[in-house]
Length: 439
Image 1 (cartoon, rainbow, N blue to C red):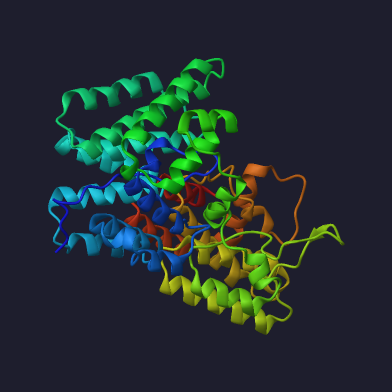
Image 2 (tube, helix red, strand yellow):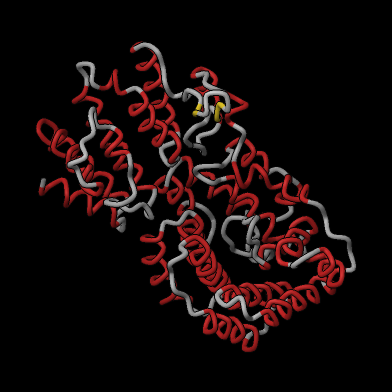
C-alpha cells in the first residue's frame, strides 16, 4: 500500500535549465521534475525513466514514485489505460482526482485540465496539493506560452495569503516561499528596470538556501544561482562559494536537447528503427545531423531506398503505435516516414496511405491539445504530391481532406467518433470533425 498520508510531494512541471525556477531547487521538486523531463514526449528517454524509478532518491519518496510511474503509463499506454489503473488503485477519491489533474497539467493537456480543475475546485478548493498544482501550472504556462498575460502581483498576493492563513509544515512553508519568489521574479522579468527587485529576490532565496541546505538540491540550486546572478562576483558575494563553470550545464544536456540521435544512428534506417523501439518518447527532424562539407542536412534515417524497405519500416512503426498507444513519438515518426518516402505513397497506394496519414494526424491532435489546427501543421502541405503557390498556408488541410473524403468519408468519421469518445474535451478533434464534414 502506498503511504500517501505520510509522504509529501511538490507538484511541478518540467525542469528548465536556461530559466530555472526557485521552487524546483528543493530536493523533492528536483527529483520529481527530473523524472518528468525523462518522460517528455519529444526528447524523453523511456529506458532511463523506468530505471529512474528505482534510484534511491525516488525509492524513498513513494508518492513521487507512484506519480512518475503514472506519468510513464500516461505517455506510453495512454490516458484510458492509465485512468483505469488509477481508478482500481487503493487511492481515495480525492487522491485519484488530484493525480489525474496533475497528469493533465504536466502533459499540457489544457482542455482536460481546465475541466477537471473546475470539478476539483468545487470539492477541495483549499487543498494544499491542489494549490501546488494550480500555482505551478500558472508559472509553467507563462514560461511556455509567452503571449499569455498573467497578473503576477495578484499571484504573489495569493501565495502570501496561503502562507499567512495556514498552519503549514516547514517543507510546505519553504515551498510556497519559493513559489512566491518565482512569481516575484516574473514581475522583475517584465520590467528589467527593477534591478533592486532582482537583487532582493536573489538575496531572499540565498537566505532560505543557507538556513535550509538539506532541503535543497545541491546541483540544481547551484544552477539557479549561476543563471540568476549577474556575474561570478555576485555569485560569491551571495553564496560564499566560487561560481561553477559552464560544465554545470552538461549534467542537464540530454534533458534539454534529448539523446544524441545523430551520433547513435546517423542515416541508418535499421539503427533508427532499433532506437525508436527502445524509446517511444522521442521524435524529431534532421536526426542524422548536418554535413558541413555539403552545407546541408544528412540523409534522414526515415528515408529508405525500396518499397519493400518502406513497407517494412511502416509496419514496424505501426507495431510500436499498437504497443505504445499513448506515445506521441511513433505517430509523429509515421507521418514523417510517409513524407520522406512520398514516391512510395503515390505509387498505386495513395488512397491507403493518405487515409492512414489523416488518422495519424487525428491521433497527434488528440495527444497534443496545444497544437493549432489551422496554423501549426506543415504536414498537410508536405504530404501533397506537388505543392502550389496558389494554396493558402492555412488551407492545405482542405486538399488532404478532399482527397480522403472521396472514398473514405465514413471510415474517417467513425474513427473521429471513436477518438472523441476517449478525448471528449479535446477542442482540436471537434474542429477536425467539423471541417472534415463541411468539405
